[in-house]
Structure formats: structure tokens, C-alpha cells
Length: 131
Image (cartoon, rainbow, N blue to C red):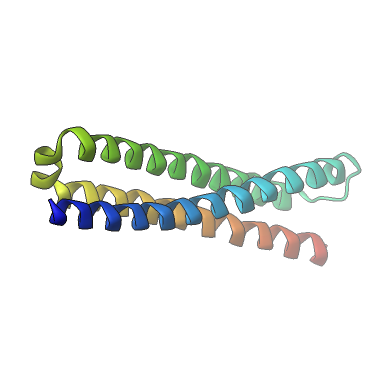
């Protein structure tokens, strides 16, 4: 039983770190979305935003939204894996590499979407300043 308890402690620590990263992305991406949408819509209504800047901003919004959705999937995967670890330990042990690979793939994809969205938001700011 000590081995299972060690795995549980490691799992809880990893889960805590993933939750921290996901929550930070939710906060930053959600804030960037709400703030930029309100500012850019007002600027577009006043004719201060070019069509190109509006297109890049729309793309950035979709990237940030996809990062939020992907990290929601990651949290859902972690909940499912935690449930499986609790009640179907043998199955998880047999397929642990698949569970971990899927988690890493989802996490990296979400992080790439997040970074891409932020870079595009900076591009919009540069376009607006340069016009």
C-alpha cells in the first residue's frame, strides 16, 4: 500500500500544478478577451480600427477562446483520470502511458493556442499604433 500512497501524493502534486497553470491561463485569456473585445468594438464603431487589425483581433479571440476550451478538456481529463485511479486502478496502471500522453498532448496544444492568441493580440496593438 505505501507504493499506491506515494503515487497518490505525486498525482496530487502534479494535479495541483496543472490546476495552477490552467487557472492562470483562464484568468489571463479571459481578461484579454473581455477587455480587448470591449475596447476594439468601441474603436471599430468610431472608425479607429482598420479592417486588417479587426481580422487579426478576431483571430486572436478565437485562439484565446480555444485555449480556454482546451484547458477545460484537460481539467475534464484529469477528473476522469482521478476517478479511474480511485476505482479502476488496474486499468489506469495498464494504460498510464496513454493517459499521460493524452494529457501532455492536450496541455501543449492549449498552451500553444494561448501563446498564439497573446502574440496576435500584441500584433493588433502594433497595427493600431502604426495606423
